[in-house]
Image 1 (cartoon, rainbow, N blue to C red):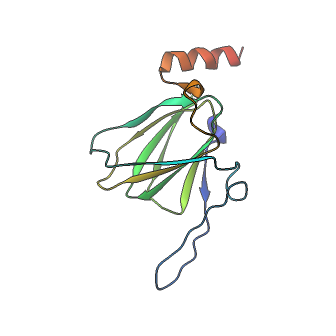
Image 2 (cartoon, one colour; image 1 turned 90 degrees about the vertical axis):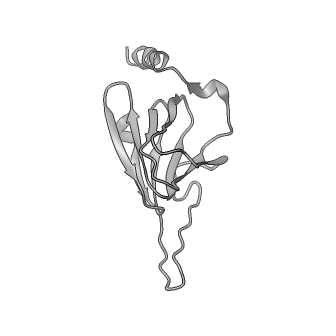
Length: 137
């Protein structure tokens, strides 16, 4: 459900020499981290994602720059603007996501609850919606 998506604040240790933020799986986030990847050099005006994961949970973090994340659970849509490296957006399974409005130099870090599995994706929105309707009958 869209109500399960939320911003998570990570620890920010301030120091005159530079700040530090750390993230610990199953402590700061609700899962053990099994995969990390990042998006970068996204041309201005391009979008990324355009899919839903079935079971996979993720945290998206704007490590540099900013971008918008549009989430859709099949019933409602909500946009989160990310642009702070010590905040992450938690996305559980069965949420359609689109990433857009990347600033120049934006980097999106993604922490995932499992290894890559092509069977865990809905890549077509109509298929996602069929599954949402089946689950809620």
